[in-house]
Length: 116
Image (cartoon, rainbow, N blue to C red; front, side):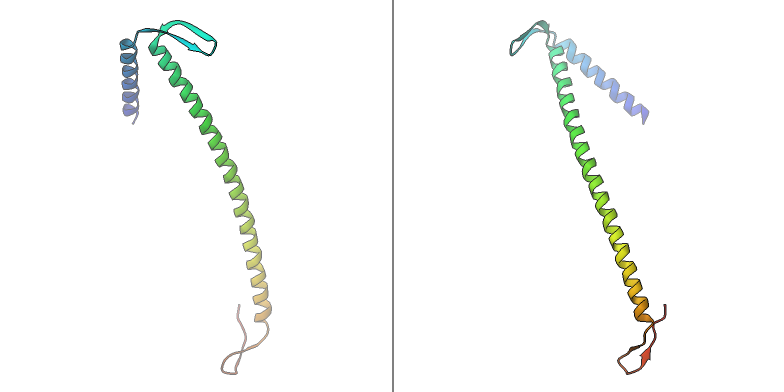
């Protein structure tokens, strides 16, 4: 697997290098009141890509923390419901024990005692 990873990295580096060597035109960038000197267009593209990656990272982190919060909320709810289910099961068992100690008539008029 490491061979595939390093091959991919080498290919990406070659593509980036080829892009840089083919796009050496000089451009001036203006952003509101800020003006740059002349810089190669490939640097502008790299900075734009890096800015896009930072925005993506920020959005991904916000999304991750929202999911973590929702997961904690769901786990608390599951724990609460599990405790309630255990309590209901315990109550049902206690009621079953109390009913099992008394004789109950069956359909044929016989009396049966529940065994636990």
